[in-house]
Length: 232
Image (cartoon, rainbow, N blue to C red; front, side):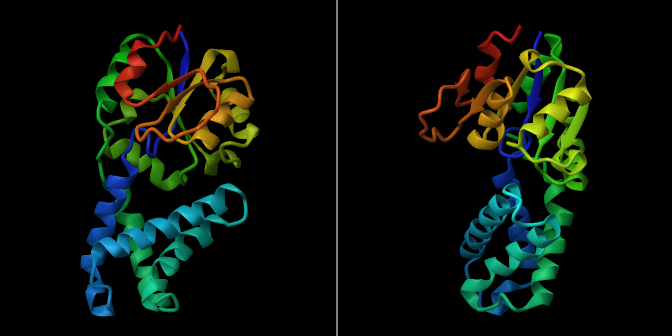
């Protein structure tokens, strides 16, 4: 019976929906319309673009965690000439960190699929590049904790997916061989190709049908499709 390593954000925990909800609340909390930001959707889109760029820099080791948290909000405010307003950027960043992990939207089928896989006898672990202090909150608040024996974060092991050491250290922590593990995630490079590089099986969760030409073990558009895959 395969041990299943799960990514968290964008795979089980609906990062986009939860993040957008928290950002909209921050927009209202700090009256960003009075700063000339009249459209909440434009603000959210500006943040998402900045956050994506910052996370890529973080994954590549060109940005530290402490810099990422503040810089993404500074960058988000640039279209309105507010990137130098340190006070509002810090307030928005603090509000986001405090509220977004408490959101509980999951991808469709998450609980049902995890329940059936657990009933089948699969050991399951979360392996995430997210920050240690927020990922545990997300798992607990959204009702996922009961399914996982460990939550392994890049913070706790010192390596981010797709670095081979992120997977090798995780295998050691769980006490399993690569051949006995399948990684399930939405990020082709970080989750899937990273796992493939060290001999771990892969299920690419690709709900938006992003094109690629990689040869993978499995690819699914919905989480429920995983239940039809032989994982012995």
